[in-house]
Image 1 (cartoon, rainbow, N blue to C red):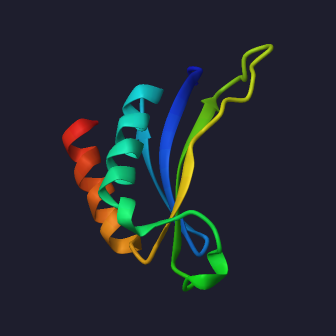
Image 2: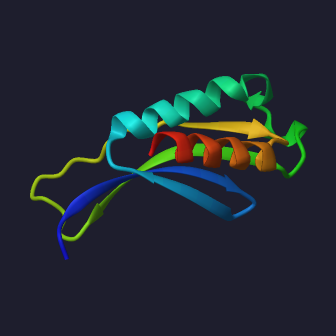
Length: 101
């Protein structure tokens, strides 16, 4: 198996996770920014208790496939939360992924 890094845009709600893999952080970040802007009005900043159980977590995860390089450092990955947009966000993420993979 060849070593590589995968950047996954992840949409997580109630423990159900869907991810879209990108070859570079730049591509994953562009997808993250697209979805963040598209669902900006549904963003949850604080007081999660005021919302239903349908809180969606959007994030980018950096994963090493194979051996982790020596002296590898953890990287900051963005994450944001949105309320009641799970299905819509999955559709938008899939459409974006198909156009930009």
